[in-house]
View (cartoon, rainbow, N blue to C red):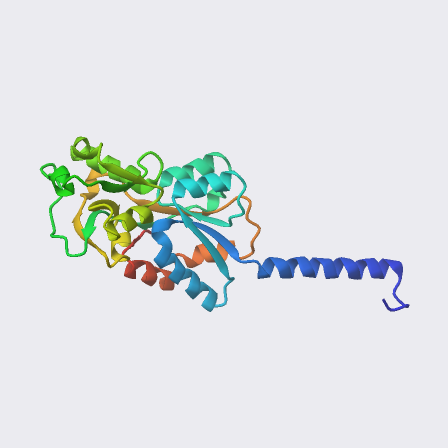
Length: 258
């Protein structure tokens, strides 16, 4: 330290250096995003476009919305949460774990029945012989009690009077991508996933689409967590509605909500 600095000046300089170091670390820390598993390909592309345009680096964790919400509740350091349904976002909001003013409904999706690639198309309705299609196998469906895709699937099956046919033939999974993988690997003859999941896996084909009226609207809300201190959190949330992000989401099969 130069001799001509007074003690007060030295303390001021040390404080400034410390503050600068803190800011630098914050700017260098990746923006941590917790997102529903069904968003993977699209959100990976969106995040890459954001970073390429000068935005912060991102670190994205994908899983079932229920698992991610519970992790945030337990103190996991997430900056943003993108859920596959409103219920888990409502859960965090009720517990003061998101910034309510930042919440926005971002995307929509469709629910489909998938089988091996080349599966013939069927019309899904009350007369569908779903049990017959399984031929003794199991129907891969995300956890119907907690995972959004599973909840939508159960609602659709019950609405169409098909649940009784398959309730004892369900292969429950921890998220929608695991259900998709079971069908892709031939471990389950059919599964229920989102249309965007089916489009991301070449080993499966869409057998049919569940009528939109048979289940609650599929809505993906996004919000900044209450604990986030990352300076880019708001900017990334805004970018999710940019023209560049919209093109990516639409190309991946999502409906963009306004």
